[in-house]
Image 1 (tube, rainbow over the protein chains, first blue to last red):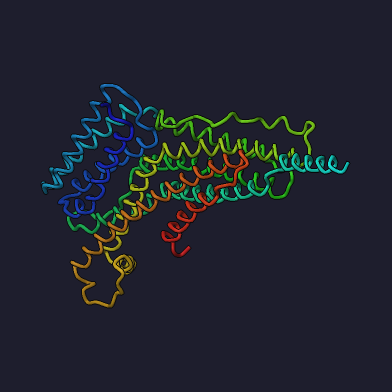
Image 2: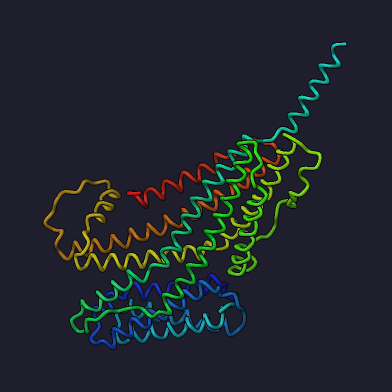
Length: 114
Length: 323
C-alpha cells in the first residue's frame, strides 16, 4: 500500500524530534566547533524539511515518491539505532546527516506546492 | 354563532405560532457559536503566535549549549534566516484558520443581534463573509488532505435576496433567522471539516512547539537560571503529596529527575492541547446539530455545545493558571 501524506509527515516530524531531543547531549559531547556545527546543521536541515512539508503538504504520488519515503524510513531507523546502541558521536552525526538528506529528498518529491 | 369567531381566533393564533420568529433558540445558538468560535480561534491563534516567536528561545538555548562546552568557541548561535522565514510562512497559514473562525464568530454575533433585538442586523453580510472565509479555509484543508474534506452540504443554501417582498414582521424575521442559520451552518460545517482534516498537522505542530519550549526550559534549568520548584509543584500535585524542604535538591540525581519530569509534563501538555482541539471540533459538530434543531423547530441541544466548551475552558484555565 502506498504511503499517505500523513505517513510521510509523521516520519519527517519524528526524525526531526529524535535529533532535537538529543541535541543538548550531542553538543555537550562535541569535541570541536566543526562537530557542533554539523550537529546544528543537520538539525536545521531536518527542521526546515519538516516546516516546508507541513506548509506544502506531501500529496504527490508516484514510484519516486514511494522510493523517497522508504529511504526516509530507513534513514530514520538508522538514526534511532545509532542513539539506542550508543554509537560514537561522529557516527551519530553521519546517521542524522543521512536522514536529513533523505527527508529533504522526500519533501522535494512529494510536495505539491513550493 | 359564537363558535366561528373562536375558531377564527384559534386559527389566527396557530398561524401566528407557526410564523413566530424562533428568537430565543436562535439567541442561545448564536451565543454558543460566539463562545465556541472564540475559544477555538484563541487556541489556533496561540499556535500561530508561538510559531512566529520560536527563534528567540532557540537563539538562547543554542548559544548556551555552545558556550557550556569548554571544547567549543563561545559565540552567538543564530539560526539561518531561511528557517525563521519558513516558520513565519507556516504561522501565516495557521493564522488563516484562526481568521476563518473569527469570521464565523462574527456571523454568530450578527445572528445574535438579529435574534435578540428584533432588529435588522447585517446578518446576511456577516454570514456571507463567514462562508467566504470557510470556503477559503476548506479549500486549503482539502489541498493538505485531498479527499478527506467532505463537501456535502446538508441542504441547499437559501438566498437572502427574497426578503422584503410582501413578508413582514415576525414572518420576515423568522425567514431571515432560518436563512442566516442555514448559511452559518454551512460555514460551520466547512470549518469543522477543515479542522478535522488538519488535526494531524495541528497535533504535529503542537508536539513541535512544546518540544522547542521544553528544550529551552531544560537548558535554563541546567544552568540554574530557573527554579525546579514549578516542576516539583506539578509532580507533587500529580502524586497528591505535600513537599517539604530537602537537602537533595542540589544533587545530580534530583536534576535528572526534574528533567525527566519536565519531559513527562511536556507530553501531558501536548495531549491537553490536542484534546482541546478535538473538543473544539466536537463543539462545532454540536453547533451543527443545534442548527438542524432550529431549522426543524425542535428544542435545541445547546447543552452539548456547552459541555465541550466547559471542558475546553477548564483545560485552558489549567494550562494558564495565572490568566
